[in-house]
Image 1 (cartoon, one colour):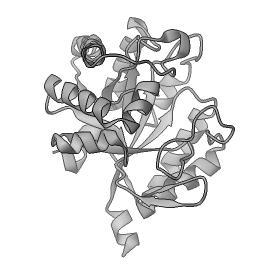
Image 2 (cartoon, one colour):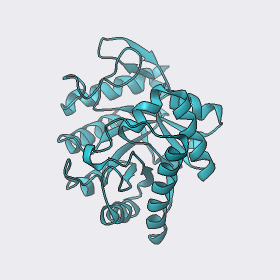
Image 3 (cartoon, one colour):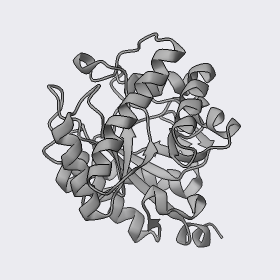
Length: 265
């Protein structure tokens, strides 16, 4: 019965892109956009600029990849990965300003921003803090109730979005390990990242098949999974993306852009 369920299942592959900065080269972005279904585009606050946003939107349109905003703290020095304590007003302004920047560029190309996924420390903090998660969810719903909110599965972000009856896509991370509470292992720990593409594809397929998080300890946590995230700033991103896509297709899953998934139509 599980086989039948998997064979009829839709899945999405998303990737953080346009993150050109002193921390990261975006040279593989065009190749990644031939593999993934949805792009989370850096909006200039942690990485990227108008040139990279235009590039990602243009190639995404050509390849039929859906476009999402990837807003962060305004902290390019630390790639948006350092925690900051901001007021609700400041958080709202961060999200709205970055969405507007990307939406303006997308509109020039005859496209639109169809989802939002917060980046880095902002995302990690909201996973644990229902108040911050609610501020983010309300802000995104106020921008456009039809926006798909891409959130880590089982997080406070998912809880807040459900409370507001939003369009929610739940994601897992292909290249990250999980703690027993369902949160990501801190990047400060040596086992935070999964850099071997073969290991990553097995990690992903097991989670998708069982609809559970694989924790580093061996524990499994039941969850909803709509999308698989591949981080575009890892050295093995391209090989990992190819390996995961091939393995998902081989096992009968149907790859879709977020905005074309049946649950959002």
